Length: 330
Image (cartoon, rainbow, N blue to C red):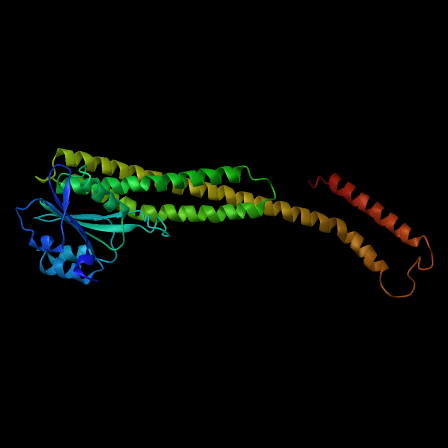
């Protein structure tokens, strides 16, 4: 992988919502006092690690955080900046949304460095905004916009989960007795939905706390506009977390109802089988007794004996059904 490939993108912010794309050479030449810069790196590239450790001026702890293979959302502040780890739903083709993609962010007054392991659509949204002149105007504003886009990208996924759960609820409540196969298929879908909600909440709950901690920082480069957008991102993250809690709890209730209906269906099936066995057992005993190959079986030489036996069996059947009804056996 070349140095160019290690640099996903870099922009100089003009303070008016626009950004000028720059290459790797210009990134390395940037110094404090120049226009605010945003550098987005591929954390899997060796050149990214080399630049971060040798030329970025960041502490080893911060660099380790930017390059870590496994992270959970959190916020750490230092004398010269903030390390913020966030996650977004995985909207890459063929991937599961709950396999969330992390983005590691270092924020200073005039510099933002972000790293990724996999592609994140929210980053592309910010790039498009900068290129059309409707992007962030400062480093703090950039991070707030990114946090908002992460939440906005999650909304359709959470909404789809709620719709799927509502559909499963309707399907289960309207299921006809004896359709245990359909109920088992619904149970598989319900388990997948509940697992997805738990997996998403695992990261979104700490992300809400990380954004809340970042929004409460008092830094000169975090003005009222940035704080306002950050509070919106915190509120949205909190709402998404609450919706995931609701999906998880509703899934548990629906799963209990589903288990009850499957059990009822199995009980009905066992009842029918038991009833049939109860009715057929005496009849089977009589026919088996008359079918043994020994001498002395009555009616062997009588032409009408077969029909007599059938009549006797019919009488037994009627008596059994009457007795079962008399005993009120459903």
